[in-house]
Amino acid sequence: MDATDSTDSVDSVDSVDSAGSLALRPLTARSVVLSTLLGHHPPALPARALVRVGELFGTAEGTVRTALTRMVAGGDLEQRDGTYRLTERLLDRQARQDDSRAPRTRAWSGGWEIAVVTAERRPAPERAALRQAMAALRLAELREGCWTRPANLVRDPAWPPVVAGQCALFTGAPEEDPAALAAGLWDLTGWARRARALEAALEALPGGPDRLAERFTVSAAVLRHLLADPVLPAPLLPADWPGERLRERYEDFDRDFRTLLLRHIGV
Image 1: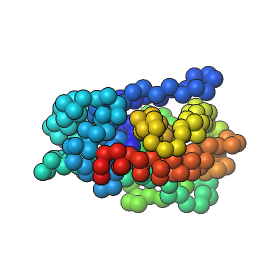
Image 2 (image 1 turned 45 degrees about the vertical axis):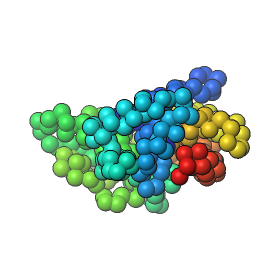
Image 3 (image 1 turned 180 degrees about the vertical axis):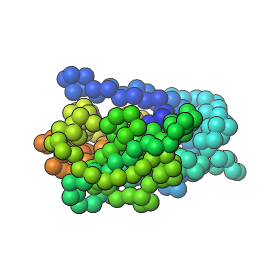
Protein backbone atom coordinates (compact mmCIF):
# COMPACT_ATOMS: atom_id res chain seq x y z
CA MET A 1 0.00 0.00 0.00
CA ASP A 2 1.10 3.58 -0.25
CA ALA A 3 0.63 7.12 0.87
CA THR A 4 0.18 10.42 -0.89
CA ASP A 5 2.92 12.99 -1.13
CA SER A 6 3.52 16.03 -3.32
CA THR A 7 5.43 14.13 -5.98
CA ASP A 8 3.64 10.81 -5.99
CA SER A 9 -0.06 11.48 -5.70
CA VAL A 10 -2.19 8.37 -5.66
CA ASP A 11 -5.34 10.33 -6.46
CA SER A 12 -7.23 9.08 -3.44
CA VAL A 13 -8.14 11.78 -0.96
CA ASP A 14 -9.99 10.71 2.16
CA SER A 15 -12.50 12.79 4.06
CA VAL A 16 -14.47 12.44 7.27
CA ASP A 17 -17.76 14.25 7.79
CA SER A 18 -18.95 15.78 11.06
CA ALA A 19 -20.56 12.49 12.04
CA GLY A 20 -17.27 10.64 11.63
CA SER A 21 -18.22 8.82 8.42
CA LEU A 22 -15.26 8.05 6.16
CA ALA A 23 -15.35 8.61 2.39
CA LEU A 24 -12.61 7.08 0.22
CA ARG A 25 -12.15 8.00 -3.41
CA PRO A 26 -11.54 5.13 -5.84
CA LEU A 27 -7.96 4.38 -6.83
CA THR A 28 -6.68 5.01 -10.36
CA ALA A 29 -4.60 2.47 -12.29
CA ARG A 30 -1.44 4.37 -11.32
CA SER A 31 -2.52 4.40 -7.68
CA VAL A 32 -3.14 0.67 -7.72
CA VAL A 33 0.32 -0.04 -9.15
CA LEU A 34 2.08 2.23 -6.64
CA SER A 35 0.08 0.89 -3.72
CA THR A 36 0.84 -2.69 -4.65
CA LEU A 37 4.58 -2.21 -5.15
CA LEU A 38 5.06 0.02 -2.10
CA GLY A 39 3.46 -2.66 0.04
CA HIS A 40 5.51 -5.50 -1.45
CA HIS A 41 9.02 -6.48 -0.29
CA PRO A 42 11.06 -6.43 -2.44
CA PRO A 43 9.04 -3.86 -4.44
CA ALA A 44 9.06 -5.71 -7.76
CA LEU A 45 6.31 -7.70 -9.49
CA PRO A 46 5.60 -9.01 -12.99
CA ALA A 47 3.10 -7.13 -15.13
CA ARG A 48 0.61 -10.01 -14.95
CA ALA A 49 0.41 -9.67 -11.14
CA LEU A 50 -0.21 -5.92 -11.36
CA VAL A 51 -2.88 -6.53 -13.99
CA ARG A 52 -4.57 -8.96 -11.58
CA VAL A 53 -4.70 -6.29 -8.89
CA GLY A 54 -6.20 -3.88 -11.40
CA GLU A 55 -8.93 -6.43 -12.11
CA LEU A 56 -10.11 -6.08 -8.51
CA PHE A 57 -11.18 -2.53 -9.37
CA GLY A 58 -12.62 -3.31 -12.79
CA THR A 59 -9.59 -1.76 -14.50
CA ALA A 60 -8.90 -3.20 -17.94
CA GLU A 61 -5.56 -4.86 -18.64
CA GLY A 62 -4.76 -2.30 -21.32
CA THR A 63 -5.33 0.55 -18.86
CA VAL A 64 -2.93 -0.98 -16.34
CA ARG A 65 -0.27 -1.63 -18.98
CA THR A 66 -0.60 1.95 -20.25
CA ALA A 67 -0.12 3.20 -16.70
CA LEU A 68 2.99 1.02 -16.36
CA THR A 69 4.48 2.43 -19.57
CA ARG A 70 3.85 5.99 -18.45
CA MET A 71 5.32 5.34 -15.00
CA VAL A 72 8.51 3.95 -16.54
CA ALA A 73 8.74 7.01 -18.79
CA GLY A 74 8.14 9.28 -15.78
CA GLY A 75 10.87 7.69 -13.68
CA ASP A 76 8.58 6.01 -11.13
CA LEU A 77 9.34 2.46 -12.24
CA GLU A 78 12.07 0.42 -13.90
CA GLN A 79 11.20 -2.49 -16.17
CA ARG A 80 13.35 -5.52 -16.81
CA ASP A 81 12.24 -8.81 -18.40
CA GLY A 82 8.59 -8.06 -17.75
CA THR A 83 9.09 -7.20 -14.07
CA TYR A 84 8.42 -3.71 -12.75
CA ARG A 85 10.23 -2.32 -9.73
CA LEU A 86 10.28 0.99 -7.87
CA THR A 87 13.02 3.50 -8.65
CA GLU A 88 15.33 4.92 -5.97
CA ARG A 89 13.09 7.90 -5.23
CA LEU A 90 10.15 5.66 -4.49
CA LEU A 91 12.29 3.26 -2.48
CA ASP A 92 12.87 6.20 -0.13
CA ARG A 93 9.14 6.66 0.05
CA GLN A 94 8.64 2.98 0.85
CA ALA A 95 11.15 3.31 3.70
CA ARG A 96 9.17 6.27 5.10
CA GLN A 97 5.97 4.29 4.82
CA ASP A 98 7.49 1.32 6.64
CA ASP A 99 8.83 3.65 9.34
CA SER A 100 5.39 5.21 9.80
CA ARG A 101 4.05 1.82 10.87
CA ALA A 102 6.61 1.62 13.70
CA PRO A 103 8.19 5.07 14.21
CA ARG A 104 11.61 5.15 15.85
CA THR A 105 11.38 7.39 18.88
CA ARG A 106 13.62 8.31 21.80
CA ALA A 107 12.98 9.63 25.29
CA TRP A 108 11.88 13.26 25.17
CA SER A 109 13.48 15.75 27.57
CA GLY A 110 11.45 18.78 26.45
CA GLY A 111 13.73 19.95 23.62
CA TRP A 112 12.62 20.91 20.12
CA GLU A 113 14.44 20.66 16.80
CA ILE A 114 14.59 23.96 14.91
CA ALA A 115 15.63 24.47 11.29
CA VAL A 116 15.88 28.04 9.99
CA VAL A 117 16.39 28.71 6.29
CA THR A 118 19.58 30.74 5.74
CA ALA A 119 20.15 30.22 2.02
CA GLU A 120 19.23 33.20 -0.17
CA ARG A 121 17.72 33.37 -3.64
CA ARG A 122 16.82 29.71 -3.73
CA PRO A 123 15.33 28.50 -7.02
CA ALA A 124 11.82 27.07 -6.88
CA PRO A 125 12.94 23.41 -7.16
CA GLU A 126 15.18 23.81 -4.08
CA ARG A 127 12.37 25.39 -2.09
CA ALA A 128 10.01 22.61 -3.10
CA ALA A 129 12.57 19.94 -2.22
CA LEU A 130 13.08 21.45 1.22
CA ARG A 131 9.35 21.60 1.91
CA GLN A 132 8.96 17.98 0.87
CA ALA A 133 11.90 16.94 3.06
CA MET A 134 10.48 18.76 6.07
CA ALA A 135 7.15 16.99 5.66
CA ALA A 136 8.93 13.63 5.47
CA LEU A 137 10.87 14.52 8.65
CA ARG A 138 7.59 15.44 10.38
CA LEU A 139 8.56 19.06 11.00
CA ALA A 140 5.94 21.83 10.94
CA GLU A 141 6.44 25.38 9.70
CA LEU A 142 6.17 27.82 12.59
CA ARG A 143 6.56 30.75 10.21
CA GLU A 144 8.01 31.11 6.74
CA GLY A 145 11.49 29.60 6.70
CA CYS A 146 11.35 28.33 10.30
CA TRP A 147 10.56 24.66 10.93
CA THR A 148 10.32 22.83 14.23
CA ARG A 149 9.10 19.77 16.16
CA PRO A 150 9.77 18.03 19.49
CA ALA A 151 13.15 16.26 19.50
CA ASN A 152 11.76 12.77 20.15
CA LEU A 153 12.50 11.06 16.82
CA VAL A 154 15.58 9.03 15.98
CA ARG A 155 17.41 10.79 13.12
CA ASP A 156 19.54 8.37 11.10
CA PRO A 157 21.16 10.09 9.32
CA ALA A 158 20.65 13.24 11.35
CA TRP A 159 19.64 15.60 8.52
CA PRO A 160 19.53 15.02 4.77
CA PRO A 161 21.71 17.27 2.58
CA VAL A 162 18.71 19.18 1.25
CA VAL A 163 18.04 20.42 4.79
CA ALA A 164 21.61 20.87 6.00
CA GLY A 165 22.47 22.75 2.82
CA GLN A 166 19.69 25.33 3.18
CA CYS A 167 19.18 25.68 6.93
CA ALA A 168 20.88 26.46 10.21
CA LEU A 169 19.99 23.78 12.75
CA PHE A 170 19.34 24.32 16.46
CA THR A 171 17.72 22.77 19.49
CA GLY A 172 15.72 24.75 22.02
CA ALA A 173 12.53 24.85 24.05
CA PRO A 174 9.49 27.14 23.73
CA GLU A 175 8.62 29.55 26.50
CA GLU A 176 4.92 28.94 25.88
CA ASP A 177 3.02 25.77 26.75
CA PRO A 178 4.50 23.11 24.40
CA ALA A 179 1.17 21.26 24.16
CA ALA A 180 -0.53 24.46 23.00
CA LEU A 181 2.27 25.03 20.48
CA ALA A 182 1.90 21.50 19.13
CA ALA A 183 -1.87 21.92 18.81
CA GLY A 184 -1.29 25.07 16.78
CA LEU A 185 1.25 23.43 14.46
CA TRP A 186 -0.68 20.22 13.73
CA ASP A 187 -4.39 19.50 13.34
CA LEU A 188 -4.41 16.88 16.07
CA THR A 189 -8.19 16.84 16.41
CA GLY A 190 -8.64 16.24 12.68
CA TRP A 191 -5.96 13.54 12.59
CA ALA A 192 -7.55 11.71 15.52
CA ARG A 193 -11.02 11.92 13.95
CA ARG A 194 -9.80 10.36 10.71
CA ALA A 195 -7.81 7.71 12.61
CA ARG A 196 -10.92 6.61 14.50
CA ALA A 197 -12.94 6.48 11.27
CA LEU A 198 -10.23 4.33 9.66
CA GLU A 199 -10.10 2.06 12.68
CA ALA A 200 -13.86 1.58 12.39
CA ALA A 201 -13.48 0.81 8.67
CA LEU A 202 -10.90 -1.87 9.46
CA GLU A 203 -13.17 -3.40 12.09
CA ALA A 204 -16.14 -3.45 9.70
CA LEU A 205 -14.38 -5.52 7.02
CA PRO A 206 -15.07 -9.26 7.21
CA GLY A 207 -12.45 -11.96 7.34
CA GLY A 208 -11.77 -14.13 4.33
CA PRO A 209 -11.41 -13.21 0.65
CA ASP A 210 -14.62 -11.18 0.32
CA ARG A 211 -14.42 -7.46 -0.52
CA LEU A 212 -10.71 -7.62 -1.38
CA ALA A 213 -10.85 -4.37 -3.38
CA GLU A 214 -12.36 -2.57 -0.38
CA ARG A 215 -9.66 -4.03 1.87
CA PHE A 216 -7.03 -2.73 -0.56
CA THR A 217 -8.52 0.79 -0.58
CA VAL A 218 -8.84 1.00 3.21
CA SER A 219 -5.32 -0.35 3.69
CA ALA A 220 -3.89 2.33 1.40
CA ALA A 221 -5.86 5.00 3.26
CA VAL A 222 -4.51 3.87 6.64
CA LEU A 223 -0.92 4.02 5.42
CA ARG A 224 -1.44 7.50 3.98
CA HIS A 225 -2.82 8.58 7.33
CA LEU A 226 0.01 7.09 9.36
CA LEU A 227 2.50 9.05 7.24
CA ALA A 228 0.72 12.22 8.36
CA ASP A 229 1.01 11.36 12.08
CA PRO A 230 3.38 13.93 13.67
CA VAL A 231 4.47 11.24 16.19
CA LEU A 232 4.56 13.65 19.12
CA PRO A 233 5.63 12.81 22.69
CA ALA A 234 2.76 11.60 24.85
CA PRO A 235 2.63 14.77 27.03
CA LEU A 236 1.82 16.85 23.94
CA LEU A 237 -1.03 14.66 22.68
CA PRO A 238 -4.74 14.97 23.45
CA ALA A 239 -6.29 12.36 25.73
CA ASP A 240 -7.15 9.01 24.11
CA TRP A 241 -4.82 9.57 21.15
CA PRO A 242 -5.61 6.77 18.64
CA GLY A 243 -2.22 6.53 16.90
CA GLU A 244 -0.83 3.37 18.46
CA ARG A 245 -4.23 1.70 18.54
CA LEU A 246 -4.64 2.26 14.80
CA ARG A 247 -1.14 0.88 14.15
CA GLU A 248 -1.83 -2.25 16.18
CA ARG A 249 -5.19 -2.81 14.50
CA TYR A 250 -3.64 -2.30 11.08
CA GLU A 251 -0.83 -4.81 11.69
CA ASP A 252 -3.41 -7.49 12.52
CA PHE A 253 -5.44 -6.54 9.45
CA ASP A 254 -2.43 -6.41 7.11
CA ARG A 255 -1.20 -9.93 7.87
CA ASP A 256 -4.48 -11.42 6.69
CA PHE A 257 -4.91 -8.95 3.82
CA ARG A 258 -1.39 -9.51 2.46
CA THR A 259 -1.93 -13.29 2.38
CA LEU A 260 -5.21 -12.90 0.50
CA LEU A 261 -3.77 -10.40 -2.01
CA LEU A 262 -0.72 -12.53 -2.82
CA ARG A 263 -2.96 -15.54 -3.30
CA HIS A 264 -5.15 -13.51 -5.69
CA ILE A 265 -2.25 -12.33 -7.86
CA GLY A 266 -0.53 -15.72 -7.84
CA VAL A 267 2.78 -14.71 -6.20
